[in-house]
Image (tube, rainbow over all chains, first blue to last red; front, side, top):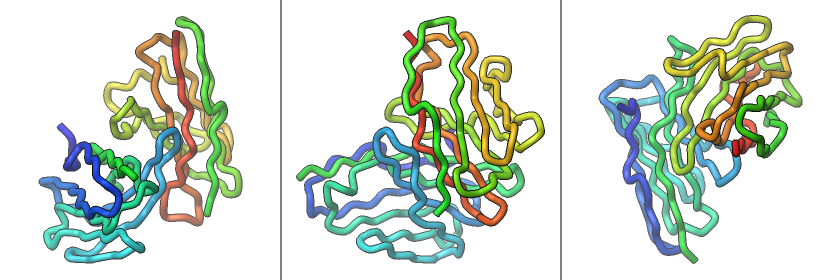
Length: 111
Length: 115
């Protein structure tokens, strides 16, 4: 079973539409990270959320950390083809000194 | 930001041969390097963690004799896939954490195809 479940697994939308990707767990996290990975490349860190209820914005991307720190969401406004990629949430396990990735959401934005 | 490189970017080999993949931190010293494996349309799965000068720590289910990891210096870690088989075909990604950083920096990945 995946510690971090993401939904949806795959999303195909038209340019200009809005979308939300979810990252859920039954565990409480000290922080969560979001990455974007383009085909044939390594993932790139987008943001780290630390405080329950925290909202961070990165241009058209809005990240939210749940109040109970068990879930997070990524909302993209007016999606563009350049947003196409694999979006991954991840948890840094301090106790084990390793990063655990969620199941991933593949986003395709059609022109 | 810090840069991590991987070499080669893609490799095709015959079944039964061994393949070595290099991961380098170009502009910082990496105290710890990680190796991940990613199958098509799936997420990244951690294979092992390596610290300079010590043996790698492998995740459950990862064969240490098949995936040999050597972290010989603070800027270089290598992953050798021994006696590769078609089921070892995958995208292998490394990452590194530096002394002065609190985040991981990922390499561009290596696409391994075993015929």
